[in-house]
Image (cartoon, rainbow, N blue to C red; front, side, top):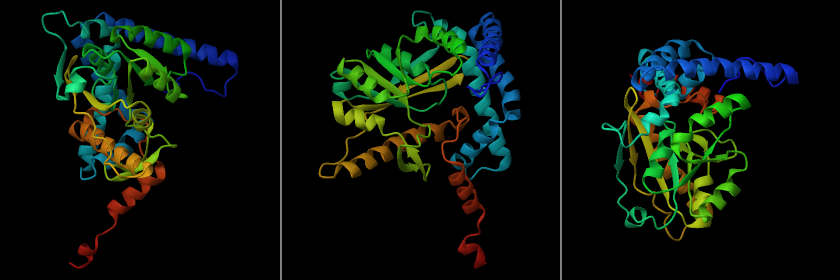
Length: 324
């Protein structure tokens, strides 16, 4: 989350004051939307962020990402998708104070529809903990709750907020998800221990990891995390994709997909890792391509240089054009 009232270069007291001010504004927002029913809070957040988001500096990054995902789209279609991204993000934020009601499975009309397309007998029998991979699509945080509902206790790898007051507030609201949390820094060791204890691990793999392996993502090479593959190789745990898409205001469908296939026998470790990265990116990019307006892409998935080069190639005339 962007720092709106402070900067790391500020003195300690300015940082503390800025963090407290930031948290106070967030508290007022969450207190206000908590007074509304979940669906109305969702609609309010959707409208508010749909108006404000495209006017923010971060919107440029959203459009940069969508320009590759929707490479054949017109400028008007690209702007519309960008607005939808902000609308969905606003709905997610406004729904945070309502996670307790959204995750209530005993109510007459549960807010989350669960679909399991993974019919692997070992998965259904909970033979091993799993490594669940997802994209920031729809209401991505709800996937952790559904994983637990499927009988898999899970710890989710996440990036703590820089503002400690806001971080504490958000973590308390996340309590209904029923999952544990692993800070992103040095996550491999903690995730490995989690799996060895019999708990599953969840992580979002649609963000840029500059130290990761270059693998195609929407046909354009992008640094991709190898963490799921390393964990799978070290523990023998399967990699299972999961997606929570938005059906409407405070309405969702979570789908658990078939386990990613292991690399073919006879290939070396380097080739095996690349093939698994490519397969994971293929599945994850499919989630995004299906719902591009629900993909939270406020950080560049590709570097500035790659995006600039992609746009240059898109504008360059093809040899066929010269022949006309």
